[in-house]
Image: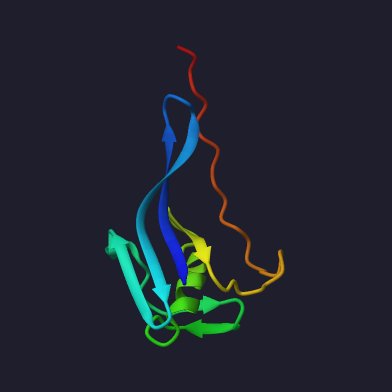
Length: 112
């Protein structure tokens, strides 16, 4: 089973820290995919699997597709994070040649 969470960041005005709000979850187990939350935010097309070095489709390889979703959300306001994986891809740390998305620093807070 693989579970991926689709998140959006926001700045907490009280603590001046970036916090993450989960908007949708994707769970794949064997040949089934379940989506919870705002499923309109889920990238439904093929995504690149770094482990397999090719595109994967949700209908054909649901677990690998769900595991690879973070690579489909690399440049926008949304971020996908694998939160559970029974069988991780086995890529060693740093094996990806893709840079992680940059997260901006929160604005400076005024002391009240």
